[in-house]
Length: 236
Ligand code: FES
Image (tube, rainbow, N blue to C red):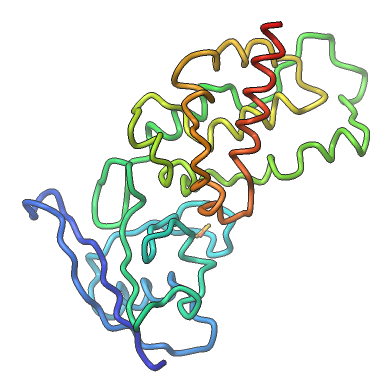
């Protein structure tokens, strides 16, 4: 494979009446080239107007979630050879989010929902002399929850999220479950109160797209099931 066609959705709201697709030829210059390397090659060598987000290049900052050949993923940790189909990659912005320019979407609403669920430790008891401790077993309960990098790949792959503009979505729900599950947290009741409505976990219909989309291998559906169980137990 010497070159791959990148078919990229382009849109400049100041110039274009509507989005369109444009093809670029990307040279494969080294083994294991990432999709982000291809985007950089286009921007640096062919078309400096192409807009996309990236920062860490290591799957840590969560800024480069994209829809690549129909699946949400991070361009910086996705090998071109793993996703290319018939010599082509179709690259679009994350679906279901307002488009700003080219591959850049507006994450304001996504992040507002994250902050709505109070993603921090809530404590009411006086602090101990040094720190709030956890046993290794209590700490282990946070594995698979704390690793979320807020890339929005999960929420923007969820049909329930597209259909209900007020649905919190898998990312915010995974993060609220992370704190409810934390042995040091004393805000579970407050958080569960926020979630008992039709835009909370009950909006999840177990479609499971979020699991496939998460680049960190997390399972938001399982977290949402945990919240549903906690809400039921709280009632009875
Ligand atoms: Fe930071 Fe991809 S550039 S996660």
